[in-house]
Length: 225
Image 1 (spheres, rainbow, N blue to C red):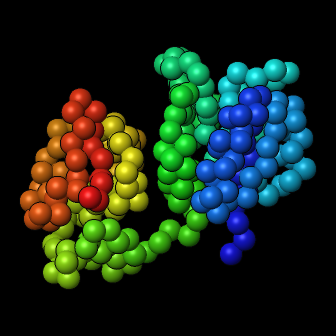
Image 2 (image 1 turned 120 degrees about the vertical axis):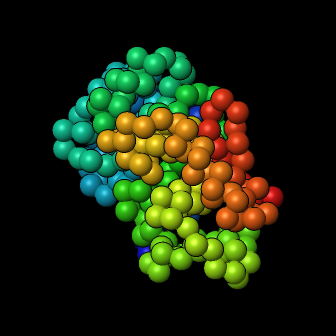
């Protein structure tokens, strides 16, 4: 399978190198641009970019403008990077069709994990039908789960929840993010729904239920010791 190509756009060469090194190590092909205008030239010349990582604050043309131009022609996944943790910026980003929004400074490992999750979600990466972690095996096609070889009966939502946790292993997930991803945007319930499902899921998984860590005041993280 050909390597997926990622366009990294940032006016700081040090930042581009940091992101590129981590992505290359994860087997992605990386092309770079130092400003918005160069990014658009590269994007439309290449015609095979699978994902764009885009800094907001740049000379010549900022990230918002680049995002608008790309969105007029393409649904390619876009991750915005910004030094400002401003909620209005975040809302503007989502209105423009940004898939993910990451504030600097960030962990490059987390960025790569987000890239992988987005590419899976947008089917750029063939979704692996079999997920495995710490003795847990989840088969999407058969809709079955085993823990250390023993079958575990899960409800539909518990199965979806465990799939989502395993696909985002090591990433802290807010309750809102879990609601949006597992219950979809049209669900108007509250976070207690998630807590109830997590509690049931943990109990059914026995000791392996401890892999689902609670992050107080935020949500959960699936982490295998």
